Amino acid sequence: MSAGKSTLINALIGRKIMATKNESCTARTYEIIEDAKAKDVICDFLDKRLALKKDIATILHNENNPNLKILSNMYHLRDNSLWELIDTPGINSSVDPEHKRITHEMIQTNDFDFLLYVMNGNHLGSNDDLEHLEFVRDHVDHSKMIFIINKVDQFRKEQDSIETSVHKVVEQLKDLKFKDPKVFPLSAYAAYLFKIELLGQAIDEDEEDELSLYKRKFNRKEWDLSRFGNLPQLRLIEKENVLRQCGIANLEAELVGEGA
Image (cartoon, rainbow, N blue to C red; front, side, top):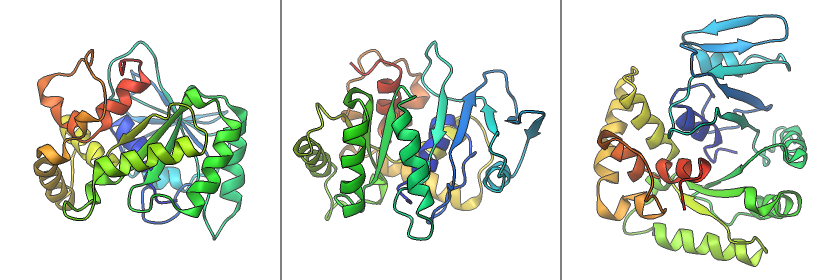
């Protein structure tokens, strides 16, 4: 909970579709399917379709129809596939333990190409993480696992080390018997803001301030996350360099098979 799963979904899409707060936001699974021709966000029910132009995250957060599927254009590295993203609840909600059951059921289906395990970079190594890691270790093909250390934008230069955090997580995963764990540090929120700007979407004053801060921060050598990946074949136009720096390009390269 609050590791930034929904923010990462929005960053991968390039649009705010999932609600994001510092609390439990996702109480069910949401399927977001890429539709390259969709100008609006489409809510697809069994018997009808609705086009959403504004307040998308709020509307979807309050929608309880179990048959809902969401269709949207997505902005990510070019590949020959249409993506389908599934947002699941956090497993450590003390208010509603049902969230854990929902996520465990989805994981146990193994009906996915990748499972993105999102860790809060400010709370690595928690007991909740350990318990959930043991669960996915026993129920998911390790080749499908991608581990993400999120919120590294909140690290402080004199107190935190991205390299040390990545090393510790890799070693912890190896101790838990994960085979060749793939670990990517990133800032999902910075990636989301960078994409929003690249797409010419409107942002408010607070987001403008944060965007300016992130541009300066990730442009510094010590914060440039592009070094945590192998991108020799990555096709990015020059203005998208910020997507390398915040770490999202490394992750997307892994998803589309260009990371090696």
